[in-house]
Length: 220
Image 1: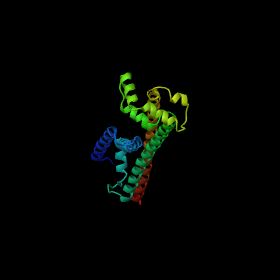
Image 2: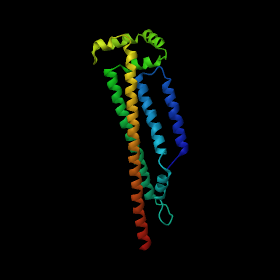
Image 3: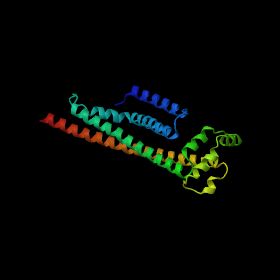
Image 4: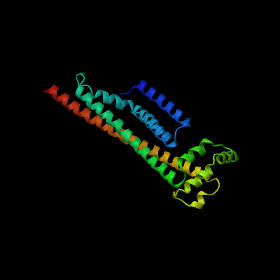
């Protein structure tokens, strides 16, 4: 069930892809977000699938054999289908988490601050407030916010035209994403436990079924 070479290769490629995305400058923020999500799903799915307990992997492999030690192609196919369902269930959970994250991003983009402006602001981040403020002004990001607000977006116009709105919005943006990240980790952990429990129950059920069939054949 485990392919450690594929696992290591998947980790290396995913991490390399994520690092390359972080340093990309000529790609739009939305495209970066999409690429980041694809790489992240691949990385997390690989880790979760390879994290299945060894006992479950061995039990699934054992289900492929009859009592007399011969391998059953039919049982092997059923076990492969069960493993594929395990992987697809994990993938569905990750897709749900990513979609919820996209919803949060779209709301923040429409109500709080456009992602293009937020990404440019983070790109010039500095721990020195004065230096950061100067870089924001040099890129005319405050002006971009006023132009954006003039397009009829949601919100209070007076609020958005205050000086350094971009800088003051980032804590809210980052805090919201941190809350989403924590909630997503809790959701994935809980869903992972449920999916593994169902996978374990399926292995036991099929194992009992195979044992009764083999026992009946021996007695017959």
